[in-house]
Image 1: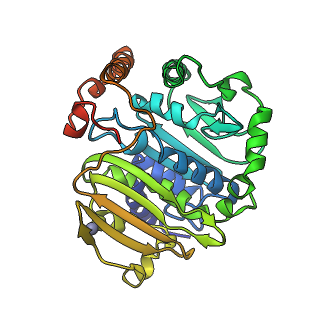
Image 2: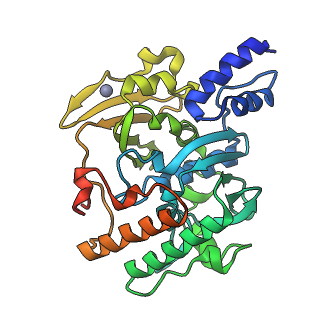
Amino acid sequence: MPSFTRLQKMARDRQKVTGEEYQTALQELRTHVPNPALIPRAAVGQAGFEASLLDLLGQIDISLWPTGTPAWGFTRLTPRLNELVAEFDRRCLIDFIKEIMPCDGGDAQVYGYPGLRIEKAGNGVALLRPGPPGRLILRVSWSDWNKAAAIARQELAEDHEGQPPAPFWVERPQDWHPRERAYVAQWPGRHDSTGPFYRNASPLSVLLRHLIVWNGGTNLDYIKLWTNGAMHDGHAYPIHFAWANGPTHPQILALLQDPIFCRDEQLGRLMSRCRCYQGACWLTLRLATGNKLFLRRDTEPVRLTTTKLPDREHYRRRLQRRAAFCADHGLPGPFDNPTSPTRKHGTFWR
Ligand SMILES: [Zn+2]
């Protein structure tokens, strides 16, 4: 059993990765005595859930978010065996709900995370699926969630010319919609808990559990998951994780604590040192799972994508809505004053 002094040191190290208060970090470590891991791994089902979540986070339209926004809105994470508890920047809630919560995409498609539902959890909102394991608790109030959800639905309706995609999670709050079940059954490799995506889920889960590390450094401009490392034809594609400004490669490597990143033999497992070209610095790691992980730090922010090409008016309305949401909640409202030059003129679209 580690000494109390050792636990205190671990708690301080853990804070750098999770952003937790010291007492929380210490308490979490103590629940795992005699063998506390600094950042515990997720159980298998939870890891698959988190991998799916990170995959969707990587697709959030962050074009309205100003420089310095925390990584996809997460400001603190408490990782546990069967859940992830998050402090969350409420300014990011609208875009989070738009991307993550499942809606009918027509033509047997589902937008968002099939089966995902919400329930009250203490002073937060729990996101989970009836049946399979996996749970994320966002420490935001029920009423904030609902206000943000109303705006999210209004914008989804705009994106679909007045025909809002039916929100499965609102229409069937306790159960899956048959179309969600059909969709998931169509892609067993991706959604089946014994399929390749789940079997290969731990790197993405571990990355998500270290997400707060990316809030270090200065002025994170954006963060993006370009490819999720899924298997195709028995071949594991790399995980491609990118960000602009924010922490440097040495800062990141110093804080990636899980053996999956091969920290113990770090230099042996780094496939390359920093290679900088065309406004980005690339670092490639060979993960313990055999997968490659590209950590790409953009030094000249690229334009990110949205699937729609909104006009200026459209863009302005969205900024106004976010500003009003912030004002309503007494939040600092930088959304009405984006500072990044790539975003200022509404040109942040592919
Ligand atoms: Zn580098």
